[in-house]
Length: 261
Ligand SMILES: Nc1ncnc2c1ncn2[C@@H]1O[C@H](COP(=O)(O)OP(=O)(O)O)[C@@H](O)[C@H]1O
Ligand SMILES: [Mg+2]
Image (cartoon, rainbow, N blue to C red; front, side):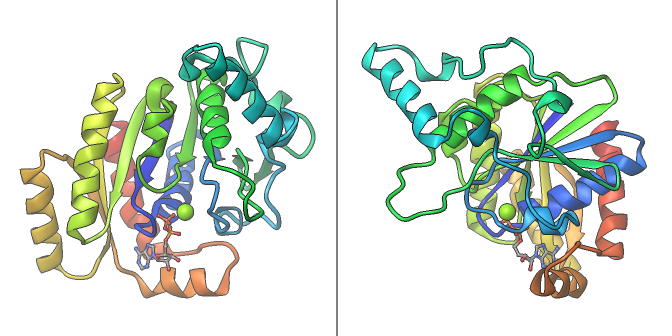
């Protein structure tokens, strides 16, 4: 099962990925997280790793090499979303090579690649690598792969969601976030994937939850559950290191139960 976690920047995608990874473990799943956000720098430490894995981009000769393949394809007038980056048809995550997949506490982590320098060019190659990896990665029946997506919508333009089983959108209490959830729902359905709904995050009161839920209902976005605003999350994200938030974890267990049912 491959699940994409989408949403606007700062809505709580990485936080939700960490909490969901733990909850899926509790439900007996083998969990691998794919960090596909080229600008996120927190996920590895939230998950308790001391350093991030080597980027998949490096195993493909680096970003410039992937970019060159994409440009060659464009110049031949061919459709980029169908381009093949890995030669093999199936990718076994455990055969990625040393350092490209790391494991701690039963949770594995892989990352696509990050933007490191000014003027290094766009993140298009990252999107292409994520899409191709998700298409070819081989998962067992009890495996769950959680994808921490980049903020916004560009990944839909690259067809990243074409081979995932479920898309979930993190929604914070703002109209912009509600609009994004509605758009994510439409775009997910347009590529034939399953939109499973929104996870409310950073909800500060029951009144706020009611207003946000009403707005999502009007936008036709199903609600999987809510993670409230927790000082324990803010404190952990300020300190760095493993995100340990027991109250939020309990809320996420309920959400995962709904997601798996
Ligand atoms: N439920 C929550 N309660 C309080 N603060 C939160 C919550 N979820 C996320 N945050 C805060 O919001 C910040 C952004 O969250 P993050 O998961 O990094 O967002 P994204 O990955 O969408 O950019 C975190 O540093 C954290 O401080
Ligand atoms: Mg993030």
